Image 1 (cartoon, helix red, strand yellow):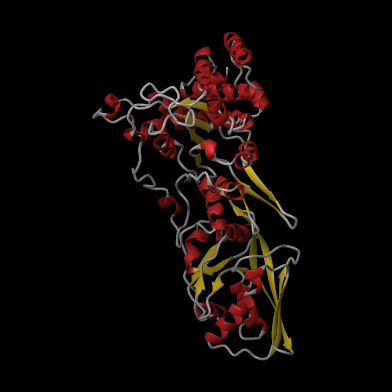
Image 2 (spheres, rainbow, N blue to C red; image 1 turned 135 degrees about the vertical axis):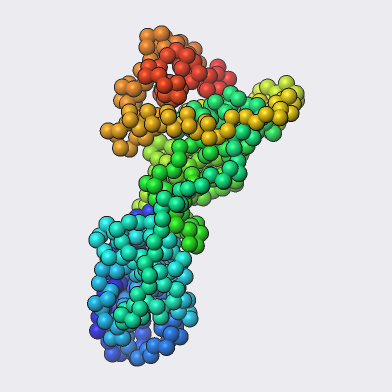
Length: 510
């Protein structure tokens, strides 16, 4: 007897429907799994048989074959345990197939029959809705994650016996309901705030410009000047997380297995700060079984690289593609996966190996050749992709001893939101462009062309400093953002002058 149960396989951050076909016939007792199943999926047959026996089901001497279709799509993970167990009961005639129509099943079985949460349930829920299915049967730990998708039912179960009762019509688990609006309330716990930062007003201004336009930032300063403190507070002035952005980011966390049990949605912009010993696969994703890297886990948030020159050079170079394309493509012989990676890059570095070049309080002991060698660890093409270079000097005692707090993050975020509103209106007809940093050269000519005086100023600076064409475009994008913060439709020489001063390393090279 044969049976068919619906499940899904995650490819990148999307899911594909998979039919779990089960055939049980007389013969030597044996279970086979076909359909390009990886190790954990091949092991499912052992967990399924043991769980069914421990749940009190008699397993007759049958030859059982599981086929996961489409057979040319790679399947991995433990989510196929539950649909394989359900399919086996249907094939043995223990339950009727009518109750499985329109339902997707996913979950890992323990040996005694309880259900454990699995990765990638949110993409499965989206796929189930898009294919017009009625709903999902998932472990209780995944229920809130799946329930944020509207238009489908989510039935959480804690044990396989509950699934059997559902199939026999004895009991229907109550549908999981999540109040999405409540998830976004009070997401700011006030743990960190720009009001805590003493001094560094010009750096705060640079970070405000970066947040308003989605620009990448490089902070250059001696140890203890507050580079990390400032970077960690950048998410507090970014625009509020929209539901669409939260879904995109939660998909990545779900696929990576980093979504906490019973967590419904990632409602705060992520901030990731990997150590400088990270590998290229850890940074952008990959591995034998590809997983999202830190770049994708920072999607719609901030990726902070502290001590930038200490990262391996080939690791930094792999960031070029995601910085330009806003996605990461991992090609393997069997498949090619794409993960989203639209993040703000914030990097920090010392001005020289000892860290005190240009510091009036501490003498620098580095030779010019040492400084040049240190800065050359970061390639020119990567620096060109960073819009804003800003110096972070040591903080004076008079600033540290001030009793009055600085401007709070909420006030800065209000100005950032106003500038982003102008950009959303400007790019309303271009769905893939949401902020000034994403403008194409054609859009730059349409929205960021300075007046004659501004063109003369920009031309003289570009020629004198020998800047690249990409640096020219970055200056115009930043100038457009500065004009938006000022509420100006045109770009004035003052806006250009401020944007030019944010190219610190270009000036120092000259």
